[in-house]
Image 1 (spheres, rainbow, N blue to C red):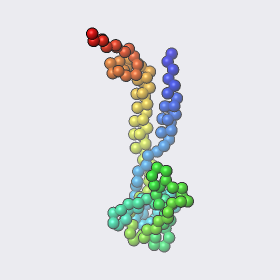
Image 2 (image 1 turned 120 degrees about the vertical axis):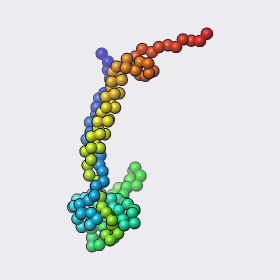
Image 3 (image 1 turned 30 degrees about the vertical axis):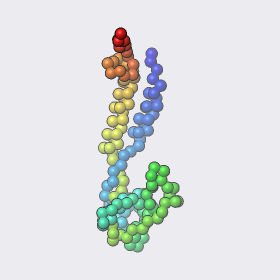
Length: 147
């Protein structure tokens, strides 16, 4: 009987991956009017009339300006308390987008990862599957030594 110590961590990783979702930017309801922004929106992407884009976290509309916090920088990011506040005039906003779950991307990612994990398990469980490829196991042929 073979023992495959990598199967349990691989199954755990597959379960974690399946619960994380992919998202895509979609036009916010009422875009480009920030007054139509749904309450509780945590993050939006703003396209300005000059074509530039930026993300705002915790957006709030006050009078004729949209306020929010600067996006995270780099992989570490900033704690929300240390992010710089940003203000944009609503007259300069061309469109607003917010992230929404994308089930198609998530499904494709989980299926692709599952197939990869299954292929790895198969190759380790069936050493004969790699014969002739110089792979992970199976019968290894020794090359003749030149005289």
